[in-house]
Length: 157
Image (tube, rainbow, N blue to C red; front, side):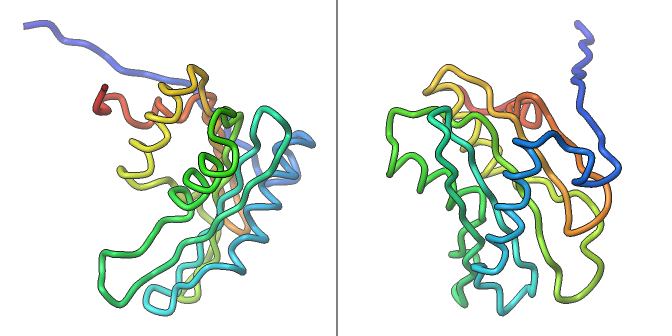
């Protein structure tokens, strides 16, 4: 038996004000995208924004469905939109944030497993890591230099 340790570094900021200009703009775009969410069941509006290496910003928001779990996560929406509009352009960074209609929105939000796998596949397809910036409407922000670090045992193709 071999024991192994998996570790990765991440950045923690006290608030979105502490982000650099590019990350701050991307995070603000994700915040604005929460207004496009359709979340009548959870009251949990998630917005995502992707900055492509060509400078384009693509946004997406979660879309719930009464036929649960047929809804779409904001991260999945933004990945699909980016890949559809710019099929051969890599994503440089994705920011994700939320507004909760049932409580505080002051903790970083993290992508679900399906979205983590989708980011991993985009990374592998494009040969480039995706910076991931996660936060709430207020509070701390966490940034990971490579989103694939959140899915160490991802399916590989």
